Amino acid sequence: MAFKIIRNDITKVAADAIVNTANPDPIYASGTDGAIYEAAGADELLAERRKIGEMRVGQAEYTPAFNLAARYIIHTVGPVWDGGNCGELDALRRCYENSLRLANELQCRSIAFPLISTGVYGFPKDKALQTAISVFSEFLSDHEMEIILVVFDKKSFEVSGQIFDGIDAFIDENYVTDQIDEEYGSAEVFKAISEWPEGHASEPADEPRRRRLGASLFTRRSGRNADDMMIGAAMPMACVPMHAAPSHTLDDVVSHISDTWQESLLHLIDTKGYTDVDVYKRANVDRKLFSKIRSNANYQPKKITAVAFALALELNLDETRDMLARAGYALSPSSKFDLIIEYFIDHEVYDTYTINLALFEHGQPLLGE
Image 1: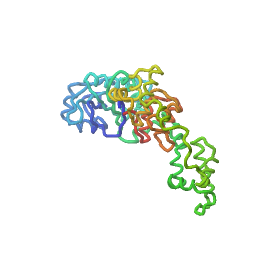
Image 2: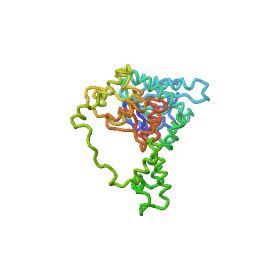
Image 3: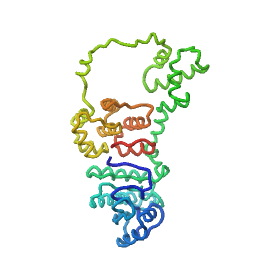
């Protein structure tokens, strides 16, 4: 994928370039700056940094990476937060923009960033994150490079709730499996209980209340009447038709197979007037992967890739479900990943970079491949 977020120590990340939040003077202190110096080899790196001299806020320069798993260290001086009215946001943008420009000049294929200025410089994490994502998105629309945002721990990244307050509430309201597990111990127990006919000898005394809860959850997610579930649960097995007479022959069915996922994708790109580049970049996948997709009518995507393309095409929920079905997937109320995707589509937010922030914070796989 073109952009990803990982939780790691940036000194242990393998990339062509590692970005250091540098001191304006040729010295190093604590935090990310000190950790990078110690891991790279403090004496050698400091000698190279002294050749650069004093640096301005927003400026970016490079040195060798020495002992790091990288070719270069790109040093940039972040702004100190002073309330937001002293040009801090513009200065932070320059840090990211100049670092990416320099990495491109150095022909780097990958670059790893910390969340600049959010440590001792006090930059609010939500504003810093939104600035970084905005610059990354603009850069990747015109360039091919893997950008890695590295966060050290969960606490340093708990910001997406400030950007989209409704995500947790949406998951709490719709995450069926969690609610069933809490009431019944497991979804398997719930299934067994829901299949007992009323008055079954093994039915607990409080089963009517439990059955009503199960029916309520069923109704909310399926849109079917709760009585459908109650009747179905109590129906004797002998009354359930085991086989229905086929209305079509196998040849009839096979002859009417609809477009494959790949054919549907390419058709939608043309119908919506997008270019291939527009779509694969918005889907957060690289050119090589898209070339494989375009050349193979029977390409089988990963689910995260299929979802990413649905978002890149700005499909609504019904269209997304149809496109996923062509690849053999579905959106499930028992999947937090699926619920987060559903939340953003409901709110007509299709930016994969923004959605990946929420997925990352909730411990879910990121969009793209």
